[in-house]
Image (cartoon, rainbow, N blue to C red; front, side, top):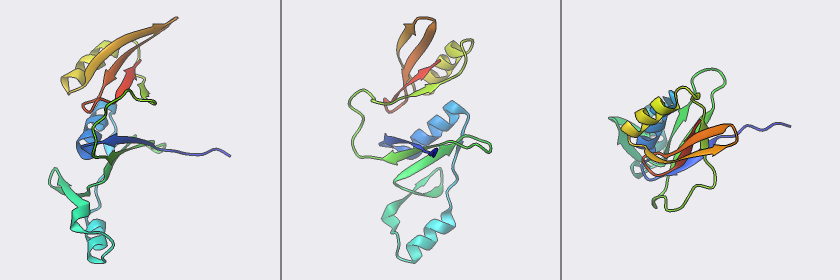
Length: 141
């Protein structure tokens, strides 16, 4: 049996980080269903303190997700945590941009708040390790 999964990224600012990653990957932030949120509050299944606004829209405070456009829509969820990242990731994303565009993507992403960490090479394989605005490492290859 094959299983599906989503990737969860802990974040101090999940909505802002979801926006950053959506832009970085060319994905889409999942839209908020304000009517659903308001109904949950009205029914007593949630409270106003469970929500916040992001870019003028009512959203759940605990997280935000992005999806790859298209029918095979992969998902990454950015989940609220109170503590900032302090140690190296045990899991990271490899973002396949193509050897010819690694440098331009590195420049674009560092211009949007990413941090260059180092270059790696093993045999014929090369990559650039970068951190997103909250310090989560990923590789461009």
